[in-house]
Length: 285
Ligand SMILES: NC(=O)c1ccc[n+]([C@@H]2O[C@H](COP(=O)([O-])OP(=O)(O)OC[C@H]3O[C@@H](n4cnc5c(N)ncnc54)[C@H](OP(=O)(O)O)[C@@H]3O)[C@@H](O)[C@H]2O)c1
Image (cartoon, rainbow, N blue to C red; front, side):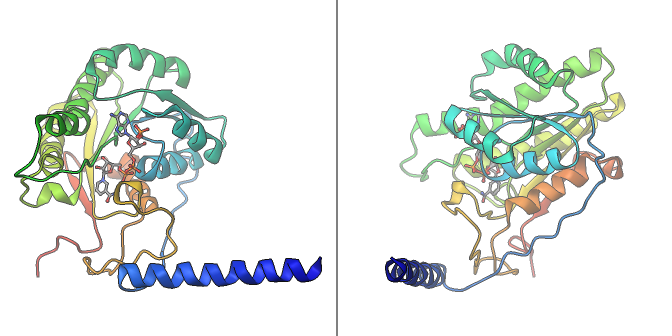
């Protein structure tokens, strides 16, 4: 029995070493994750936060961070199983989820009411994070891919921000909005993904100026290539990426850390800005 166990362990170790070497071969190098997190001493205590697309990747890590700092968080997504799984992983009685396809703008007001009920009060912070990266090529692009990309990545951000800020202004709530764009929004683009991300940067700047007089603060984040499902990167054992100066992918935890700073009062004089977090991917030399 003991011998069988030893053989099993040996095979397991060998296959772990093999998949580690394979990851180095596939990505062309090795880079260790470096995560440093700040404790904000529960400053989100009592704050109600809506994160679109929080069932995986960046939205999931933002939810985790905000929960760890006392927030009451609602994550959304199209896939109920993914939401359930995310909720199990975070395992907090301050985390709620709602099945919500943000590309359907006709359900925004109903779902804002459902969100308020689930969170037990008015939303204080909106993170417009849901996004899709569909297979797309300039010469063969179909209208369907265009529509799906625009309705999820851009149209939803506009209409959700519009409805929620109207509600906030009426009730004199000084909310905060963070829009998740991308470094693609800072580079020329001939595919809808990159173009929607340009939209978001411009919209963030315009909305930041429009809403600041009402005490509502709007900013954005442009992550670089981040190790999430969107880029088929699960887990972060080897995050080597030759495309950045840092020689590694961004981690969703790092984007969450920036989101935490941006919704803190320490960032109250930053208005309409989209902060790039990309390990030097788009920096010019
Ligand atoms: N990963 C990167 O390299 C990278 C870089 C820059 C910016 N970003 C941006 O960061 C955001 C998050 O991406 P990620 O990397 O974390 O990808 P991800 O792991 O694929 O997460 C995307 C999230 O959005 C949800 N979602 C997609 N379409 C939706 C819809 N119509 N309605 C509601 N939820 C929807 C997904 O859940 P369901 O599938 O269940 O709906 C999931 O929770 C996106 O806006 C993305 O463009 C990512």
